[in-house]
Length: 66
Image 1 (spheres, helix red, strand yellow):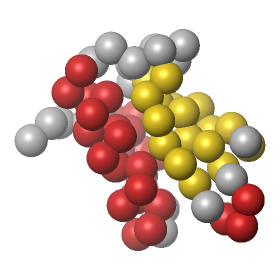
Image 2 (cartoon, helix red, strand yellow; image 1 turned 180 degrees about the vertical axis):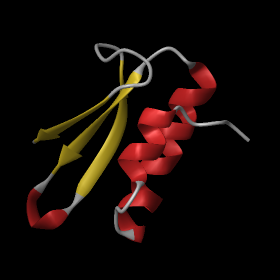
Image 3 (cartoon, rainbow, N blue to C red; image 1 turned 90 degrees about the vertical axis):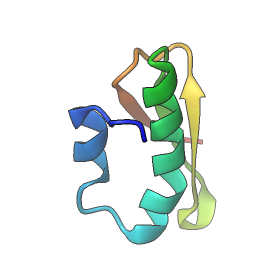
């Protein structure tokens, strides 16, 4: 099991279960690779998508409206 950086744990804190279920696997992948950060895309209809982003340093999360 990958240990998530404090910044990732802080991001997840207080988020609805559906958000955690969507974002956490990508955070875990980032923590395993330790190469890139995560972009959380805020889509229409309150949907979200999380992806690794090579432009974001490891341990950082950027939310963006897509």
